[in-house]
Length: 78
View (tube, one colour):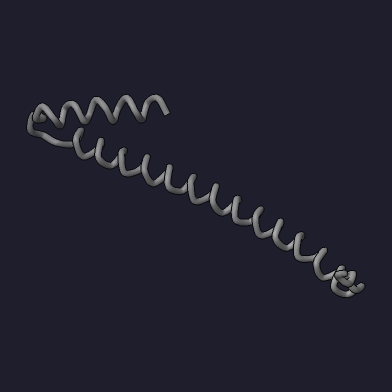
């Protein structure tokens, strides 16, 4: 038969679960912050691209005009 855990071993095993839970909570909070950061960076890059298309003095080529309309739609909806 297996011997029961001693007082110190039982106490140590109880602390490990709390540490794992804290680590998981910290990981999830960092993951959500990273996702928010990536979303902001994506939005900023789209805004810069749109600004460069708007700032062009020459008439826009067909694909540039389509991209401009798409970016305006995406940025206005979000």
